[in-house]
Image (tube, rainbow, N blue to C red):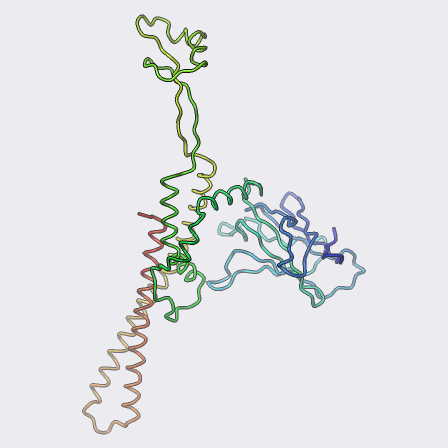
Length: 359
C-alpha cells in the first residue's frame, strides 16, 4: 500500500515483515511528531525476527533522495542511541533489523513507541510503530499501565516538592554519559520510589477466593455444605464415622498471585537488570578514577621532589619556578576533582545496590 500524509499520496511502499512473511504496513506518516495518531501505528511483537522493505511503487517514478531513520532503544556507545538508516531499495530486498541468530544480539526495541523519519526530496516526514511484549496485546499493556498509575498516584507530588536528593555534587564536570543521567534520576527519586514500594508491599493487589474443605470441626456452612452432606462424596467421607461427622466448611482465602502483581514483579526485574548494567558501567569508571588518582598522586610527589631539589640552586630561572608552581596548583585541583568524582560514583553505586536489594 502507498504511504499517505494527510491528502498527499507518496509513491512508496514501506512495511515490516517477520520471518514467517507476515506484513506490518506503514500506510500513514505525518509532517510533525505532534500530529501523529498513535492508534494508527502498526504493532510489532517484542523479540520477533523482523525486517523491513522500502521501495518505489513503480520503477518509472524518479526519486533519487529517499531514506529512512528508525529509532531504537539500543546504545551505540555510552552517549548515543543506535539509529537504523535504511536506503531506498527494491521490493525484493529485505533489510533485516533483527534475526536473533547471534548469541549476544539484542532486540532493537523495548516495549513502547518508536519513531521513523522519512527523508524524501529534501522533506522530512515522521511516523512510528508500537512494540508490545510477545504474550500481550495492546489492551493488556494499557490495563497494566493503568494499574501501575493507580498504585503510584500522588507520588509524583512527593517527588516535586520534597526536594530530597542523595547527591548534591552532581555538576563536578562529570561526562554526559547516559548511565550517569540514569544514576542521577535514581538518586533524585529514591525516596519516593521506596515510599511507593512500601505501600505496594503493605497493600498488594489481591483477590478473595472461596473454597470448601471437609473438616471434623464445624465452621461456616451454606447450602452447598448441606448438599454435600447428602451427596455420594459426603456419605463416602462419613462412612464408618461413629461419633463425629465431617462437614463441608466454607472458607475464604486471600491470594496475591494476581496478573497485575506478576507484571509488576516482571517490570521490577527488568528494571533491576537495567540498574545492574548501570552499576557495572559506573564501577568501571570508578576503577579508572582510582587509577587516575594514583597517577596524580605520583605526579604530585614527583613535582614536589623536583621543587625541593631545585630549592637551593641559584641557577634556576624564574620561569622554571613559576612552571613548577603552576603544575602543583593544577595537579592539586585535578586530585580534588578526581576525589570528588570518586565519591559521587561511590554513592551512586551504593544507591544502585539499595535499589536492586532494598532493605
